[in-house]
Image (cartoon, rainbow, N blue to C red; front, side, top):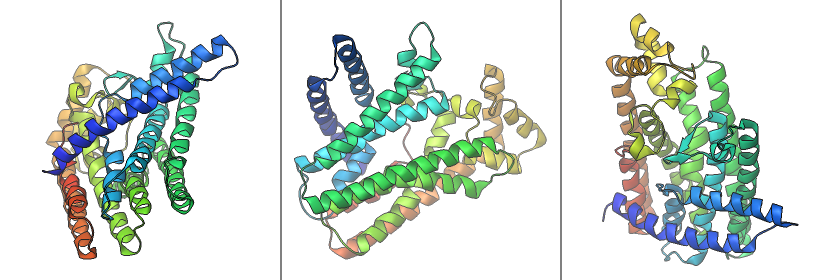
Length: 356
């Protein structure tokens, strides 16, 4: 069974577990009167719906296979740790969507748009999105702490997990600042950004959580770190490509918003560096402008293709993925679980060939 099929099977498994967990959380409730209770239920019901939207569940799968590396079968404790990672991910997406002012996430309204409602009260929507995300973030942390492992492992995992989320926030701040200093950034900044956000958050953090819970020690962490840096960059480069050329029906988000928001991507920096004056003009007519005509957006996308930037981004993404897969091969020297290594190695290649 290849990595893609293993991931699809894991998605089916973890989604059922998440659904069960949200029912438990909704049953707890909170509120000092009926009005507050109703509001909390609305926040939780939206969070449940948001969390259970079709998703890759890559982070949860890395917790799972990071644990299986050690040779033991994943149990309910590992499942709870993986669910915690996925719930924290939902909370961070809620905040990210406010910062990016996105309207859609996985094909449905983002949290601030959901709460904004028909009356279009943007401040209320954003306030509710931040309040909801903080609550869900904390619920995820609590679930991680209550996963059922002994105190020593729980402490090590918490230290790594929480520090990883903090570093992700620093990475997000770097992303926001790159959009502000557009005349003073280059390809190296893009790679640093992808390591600071995606590599740590999507790859290293969940893999380390699983490995720590498995009691693994020594060189395995060095290999997983190196794998995560290259695999995470490859993943995000493909995400950036899908953010401009992906099918919204599959990705669940606009294929125009990255350009209109002025996202700093390899697609953009390569065109700005090597494109013709006409191609650069076409890009700058929409990049970071927030709104633009359909014709102008399509011309900018065509300019990226004609400049060779799209082809270049795909090439670099595949190179990083190949390096990640090669690094994962080193895990075979450590007498670790073959199934887990096959998955970790295979997923690096799959993530740059996906269309979602």
